[in-house]
Amino acid sequence: QQQVKQSPQSLIVQKGGISIINCAYENTAFDYFPWYQQFPGKGPALLIAIRPDVSEKKEGRFTISFNKSAKQFSLHIMDSQPGDSATYFCAGYSGGGADGLTFGKGTHLIIQP
Amino acid sequence: GAVVSQHPSWVICKSGTSVKIECRSLDFQATTMFWYRQFPKQSLMLMATSNEGSKATYEQGVEKDKFLINHASLTLSTLTVTSAHPEDSSFYICSARDRTVEQFFGPGTRLTVL
Image 1 (cartoon, each protein chain N blue to C red):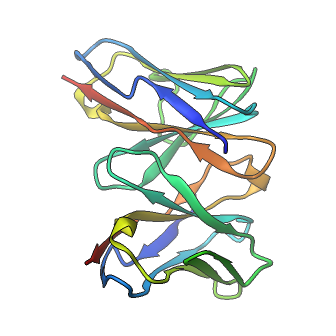
Image 2 (image 1 turned 60 degrees about the vertical axis):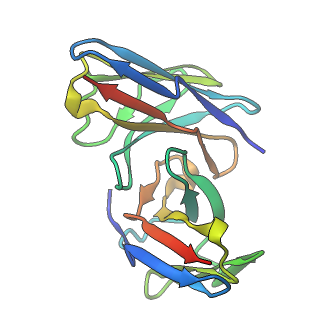
């Protein structure tokens, strides 16, 4: 599987601030880019996802920005809350869902009250 | 929403024994199920893809004779870790895909091999 590079590895944000996590991908066949949130000892939960024909998608406090030419996408969490403290993974896959996900290495986000 | 369950949630076994983990899609039919492995503080790595009624497709480096996958129905896939050793200790997570592109993850199974 080709890589999805994610940064930063860890992030500390004050309550009410904006959390920004960045990802870059290599595989141009990827046609779907989800973000997952994972709490310790739990499975990942889908937060928001985007297709490459869209430059931005917003759902509540979560926004994905997508730059197809640069092969980069990012997650913005507005008005970050302590309950957002978790590990976030970006991912990509191709084949209309027939393939498994290629995950980034994850970002450990801490929101300080 | 789509719900995926796993059983057991955790298991401790002795080295050399086999362990079976079940993954079920509770409220939808899953044509494809995936098995991932996650070591502490690391990302998820795809182990194999299974389609109902056919043999699983394993990722490079995953021993198919060690990690036996059976997808006998549209709602059940099983992963059997055969002759488990301490290095097989990990968090095993399944996901299931319905007719959309979404993958829904189970809660994971923590395997500890003594």
